[in-house]
Length: 166
Image (cartoon, rainbow, N blue to C red):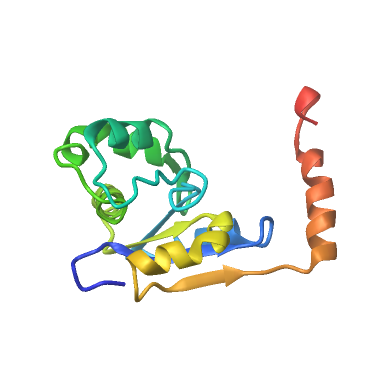
């Protein structure tokens, strides 16, 4: 996306239950690309510091509340696990949201031994403008789904659950 050495090479977003996980797993079969998500980093969990740098406490808060997984063939690794292991390195400097995201991508790339990474969070569809302001050459893979099919899928989501969750 950027020539500044950023490891972030794209964003997968779209309607919930529209195939973002499936496409992430497909792309994740590549030995050159790691796909991770659902961080909600640019949306619900975005810390708006009004142009100020993130401080160490902000970075620790973001890492502590990070969740999601790497979508690699046959593997389900927690993003938080990777970031916990690299927390000292990540927290060395205060940084902007973009710099911190780049560092997160770098740590995932290093852990997974891949050249590129893609982030997958469906609701980032609502924050494309925010992401595009930080990454002017951002590439987005946007999924969509027929509303009727979405409703059926959502209705039957409980069929895969047990007990009280169902």
